[in-house]
Image (cartoon, rainbow, N blue to C red; front, top):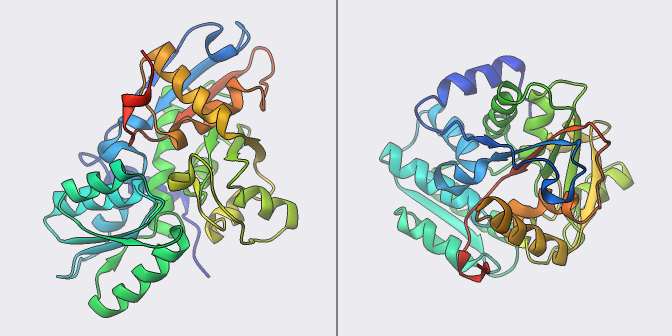
Length: 313
């Protein structure tokens, strides 16, 4: 069985990542922003400004820096963001990388992987199909595989988001986060105070966490929709489910709400986010989650790997 990260593992990740990842900023968009009541104290944590355009750089660097790397370098499967992060890490550390992505991945993400020098393999199907192809190739080459969410070192790296957020906004009582495989949400659950509510947001068309919470066990789901390239895991990670079950609240949002939240991020605060990066905010702007008055609320904007040309000015 995979081991959950301990507090010591997370503290080690904080130290290991110094000089390798950005301490991403929080911004306060102002009273009444994003359709909240004026009494709600809202902050956005802009992991969209992280190296490689998402929080994935944290888990990828933590994994690679904690492990002697073989000559074959790094290998990973990804819907896009994790692949960009692993390619970024490989280039920074001077090792090769191979990335397997599903055909549904956004072209802009595939190109950003290539721009960082990695070899890209596009696999028919969804993320799970890319992971199977990646596992087969890893068995042939011996490259070090970095899983995007279901690995102890990955999870400990993602938990550093919660460490930073707690330092930046210690009064928070609620955090909203998008869920794909669950690594970021589980990292937050392991690193923010136990009395902070965690609202996990999934697209209606890709809801592996909701399915697992409803059935009491990890289960396969169909995936699709506008955020499938980043939130399209067919099953929640084993580590993530063990952390999240009984700890979090689940909210679903539609594709239209995600697209509207993405546009509102641009209109109100000038932040260009991908669809997955705007999904957490969509719970707030659509009314799928309504915070209590006087709430101190944090929203994770988790990714920016997008073509912003479709954002209206």
